[in-house]
Figure 1 (tube, rainbow, N blue to C red):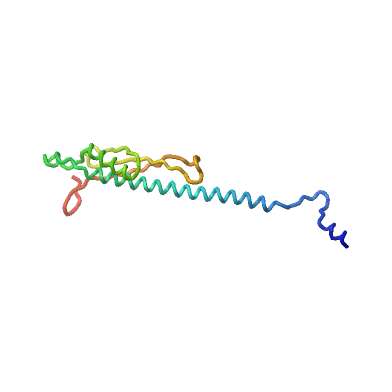
Figure 2: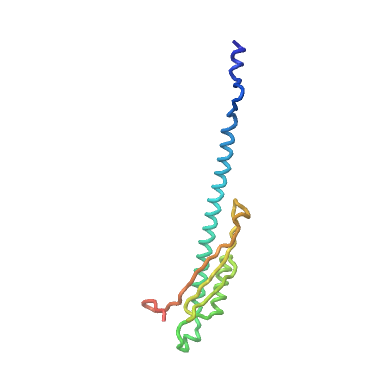
Length: 152
């Protein structure tokens, strides 16, 4: 009887054992799952940096757009911004946001200020694979008026 029980665990010649196949499948699925989680976390972080960069660029443009050319206003030449002051104000705001000063552009009439900023994004889990620059862009239009906004 004991010999008969010992013989049951043997397999016939030519058949392969499936032992360990489930462990290999689980290891491959776990590695894939870790990669997907890393991609989701790092993509979310990149979106967060892009949103913050856009917001800071928009606010830097707004702060810059408030720097009026007072001499032109007093001389009756209309409302426009003082370009040097705009750059200084935008740089100061971007420094507050811990971003490098960006490119400041002006419209031909001097009433629209556009600020472009770049920030570095370093992924948390993917390391150097996803490291790149994120660009934010914001613009502000100079308006004036007491009861309603006027642009001319």
